[in-house]
Image (cartoon, rainbow, N blue to C red; front, top):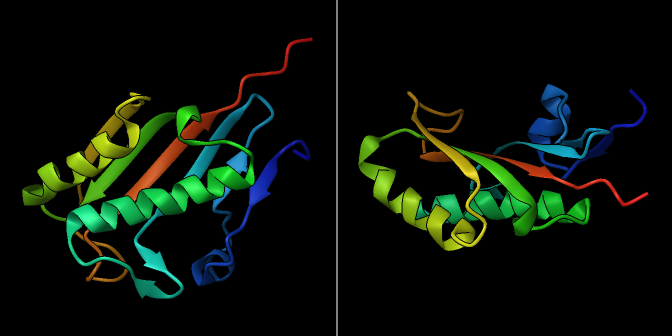
Length: 132
């Protein structure tokens, strides 16, 4: 599938686990891997709101490498370790995507690879085919 475009951000787990931060398919769909609030090897932001904003910004930075932006996002998934964080993470999502209104899911999970993380997000975007 040579028509795929892949984005790497150099995060250590990308190399260690063999994945790309984002993959653009020939049909214009862009899938962004799970993103957390780890920036430069450190957790940026302690609370669920801050972690959600930072995680979404990691995903948006990957989209930017493909010349896409927030307005191209069509689906988000938010994974949280505690139901008590739903409002904070939802507020972060609304601030970032209220004008876009992507399809969204919020799922409670048992934990992440680093127990200090309370939020992980996935983003899907779509690039319309150019007019022919």
